[in-house]
Image: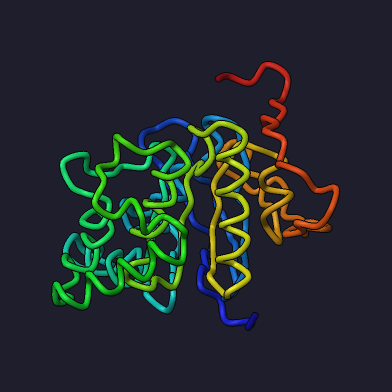
Length: 253
């Protein structure tokens, strides 16, 4: 792991109307090779933070820099190019295209980035093999289990060798066994040097997967702590319990 930041936010605020800000003066840094979990209940600012880092939205004030790019300064075309080149995204509900085969789904990002079809196919087959799902290359997503579909989504996210992998509630739609498989997959990817930002409401997933946990409350950083024993997959660790974040008294859903 190096000290060069992949994510660097400075006093970043996002307002959507005259009410309280969705994100309020957030400053945070994620180094190359880190796995950092963003934790918070609904309305805490997790989705807003993710959208700003992904270049899907712009801050009202402050700066957002990812892999050396000032994301907050990008226009629509620049943001799309930035996402293709630097960001891989994993979603709770997979976002796979049901009318394309597994192999074709994985190839989509590379083809959008201009990679030749032959090279894209080789890269996709390699990724499917490394994730243990190459036998499903010609299947359609709806024929796969939730855990298998999430592995396809991970392969697609890694297709363009992104500097940053954004995982948005990656185990939220999975049963406990599939969720544990995805957790271990994230650990393996991080162990190989992939920088990961994991957005979740699951306290135990964050603690057992990430180096650090940053908790957002009402759009602000409430805590930023180093996880002891994070990434451990030794005996006794077991599947990560799916514990929801405890809400403050009276918090809205």
